[in-house]
Amino acid sequence: MSRRRRQSIGFGYIGFGNSQATFNQKSTTPFSKYKEKLDMEAHLHYKMNFLHQDLSKEDKQKIKDKLRRQERKLFKRTAIISLIVFAVIVYVSYYLITQILSR
Image (tube, rainbow, N blue to C red; front, side, top):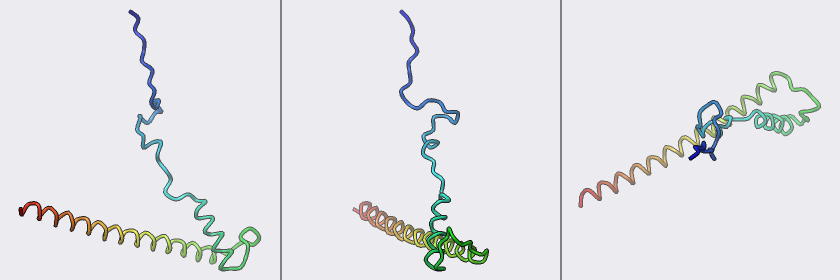
């Protein structure tokens, strides 16, 4: 009777273990997203094409600050909505548990 080695049909060993998280990682915010926003802001608000004229350091800093404020605002809004939803879920579960235990 010959012994054959079983062939694996899953992921191969890649040096980091077979953790699936290694394959699913994503950078938080790609640079191209910010570059597109910077281009759009420069084109809309300063009436210039980003490719033809260079922005001054002050203009670039204004745009970067505006983008950072927008990102912060979005993060705060998301956090507040998440907390409200979490509080509602906790309250409903507490109410249901007390109703079940009181019977």
